[in-house]
Image 1: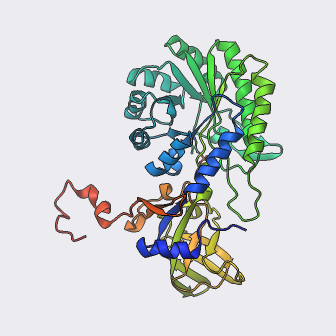
Image 2: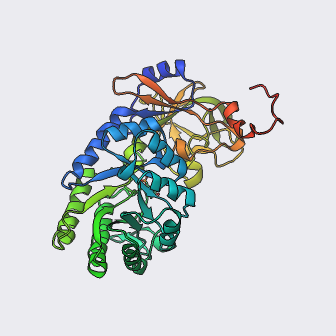
Image 3: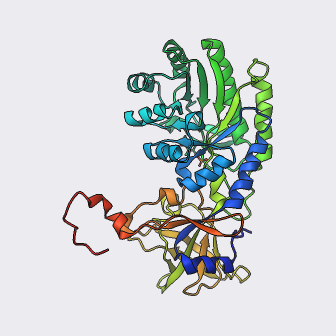
Length: 421
Ligand SMILES: *Cc1c(COP(=O)(O)O)cnc(C)c1O
C-alpha cells in the first residue's frame, strides 16, 4: 500500500493556513533518500549526484539537496540562475542541455559549470561563444534500441540527443586540439526505469566506451555521468528499485572494465531527478464537485496545471482519500480537474472509497516533474509549494500565483492598466 507522508490532522492544520491545491514536500524523506544514494556509491571516491533541477526547480529544495552533498544538473538559463542564487556554482553544476542558445553556454561558462555537449557541432559553437574549457563532457547516443535482457526499454536511435560513437572519437580529438584536457562521458538511455539493471547495464556500455576513447584519442577521462532515468514505483505493489543493489552493480562493472584499464580513479556522476524527489511530493487537493452522467466524476480544485503527467502520458498516480484509508474501494470514479480538455483527469475508472465534497485528496509521487511541468492553460494559476520540515513544521517555499502574476507580462502596456486584481 502507498501511504501518504502526512496525516489528515496535519493536512487540516496546513489547509487552515494555505488553501488547496498545493504541492507538499517531505524534507525528511528527501534527506534520507539522498543519503541512501550517497551510501550506495560510497565505493567511488569522486561520486556526485547533480540533481536534475527541471524535476523540481525550487531553491529551497536545491538547498536541502546541496546540504546533502548534491550539485545541480541545469539545462536552461533560469535553472543556471537559480543554482547560482543558492550558491551552487563551478563544477557543482553540470550543464546538460541540447539545442542550446548561445547565451546559455555563455552563462554556464561564466559560472565555470561543467558543460556537457549534446552534439559534435556544438564544439565549434561553444568555441565561438565562450571558448573551450579545460574540462568538458560529451553526451553519447549509441543509436538502435536499448534493451535490458529481452525487454526493450527505449529507442535511442529515435532520440534527438547525443553524439554517435564516431563523433565521440572525433569530438574528443577535436576538443583536445582546442585545449581541452579532462573529459567526461554522459548518456541517458531510458526514463523511469524500475529495474536494478538499468544503471549497471548503462555503466558497462559507457565504461567500455571510455576505455576505447582513451585508447583511440589518449584523452584523460575524469568522470562518467550515468545521468537520470532511475525510476520509482508509481503503482502500489510495484517493486521499488534497490539503490544499494544498483550501486553494487555499477561497482562490479567498474571493477570489470575500468580498473583493469588503469581507469580506477574515474568519478561516477548521476543526474537523478525523479528518484530524488518524486516519492517525497504530494499534490494536495479538495473534492469540490461530483457529477453523475454516463460515468461518476469527482472534480478537484487541482488540474493538469498542477500535475500534467496523467494528461500527457496517461501516467498512473496513486490517490488517497484522506481519512478513508481503511474504507472499501467500492466506488469507480474519474477524478478530474477543471480544464477545458477531456484529458484533464488524474485517474480514470479508479476504484476508491466513497468521496464526499470537501474531502482532502492526496495525489502521490508528484515531487518530481509535477509542479515543474505545469502550465497556465485556461488561465489557471500555478499552486503554492510547501515544505513539511523534519521537525513537523511547515514552510511556504513558493506562494501560489495570483492574477497579477498571470498578467505581469502585459506590464509594458497600458491596455490592462485599470484591471482590478
Ligand atoms: C530529465 C533529465 C534528467 C533527470 O531525469 P529523471 O528521469 O528525472 O531522473 C537528467 N539528465 C538529463 C540530461 C535530463 O534531461
